[in-house]
Length: 398
Picture 1 (spheres, rainbow, N blue to C red):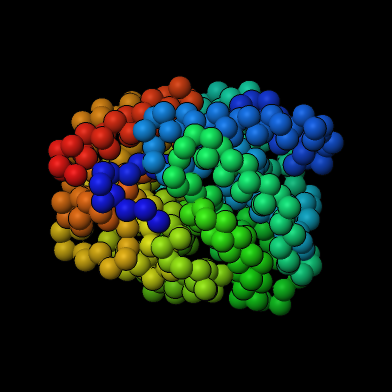
Picture 2: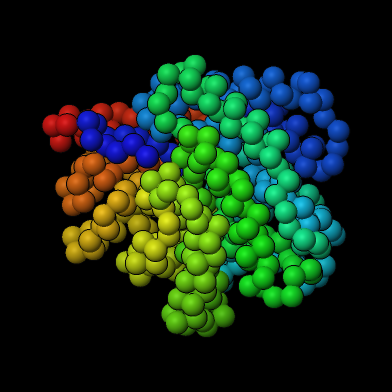
């Protein structure tokens, strides 16, 4: 993983808004409909080449494929694992993974944004299925879990690497989900215990993790539901001790999946659900930072650009960054349509750089920009990120 030694590097979290025609084809494929793969393949290749070039032109240094070939950041994995089936939702499954205290305390607000036309984030035509669901159905583990997505993963890697080479970009990254987040997205009717289910997921995902890092790309593990679990526990009067036990177990399982992979080839992304809402019950970064340090990953990507978490840069006044770790704070946010001024972006970068060392900071985004704000605004924010990194580089005299 490159460090910001000669200048502040800039990256983002992963998801960018794909062209609508690609989304429509992915939604159809997810629903079991036949699509013309001879049309889909070349269209995807061109879209990835275009989005890689666009990221480079925005001033980003560590770039991905926008997750264009995946139906979502999470449930794409079920298409690469044996043992899962889409089944009609039973009454006890009719739940939302983010149905916690924040939603109870602001129930009127959440009811409003759930109403048709009341969304506060951007959805393009055909994007209703972009989250990866099939109406009235949910994923269920019904058999032994094995990794079966080798061909799809290799094609994904080859497509990204070709686009990076064409755009003359030195470093790329590819996302993958954590075992524990997949567990929350699919019920288990096969394994004898939750622990056995988690480790089966970890053993299968290890193949994806290693294939990505062996290819020379940086692996990003997405684990937004680890911090978000605190809000769910508050809703049921959970305690800090219960949360700690939950988080430590999940991190142990993730580390099991990452065993043998050099830490400097891995970055770990957390957020607090990243939905547009009050986030009044987000667990403070200070409470979980020691847990995050235990993950076998050099990079730590986290929200630091929105009004609920921006102040938390101050914890680095007294929290010591372990040797080998790199901070990837969000310095632009998906939670507002206002485009951050590049001078503000530079100021945020410098706050971290002065506390932990500029070589230990890569400028990032709070979360994925795709489908969170209008794509025109998202790209303006990414350009502000690139310009802010250039300003910070100059003012830090790198």
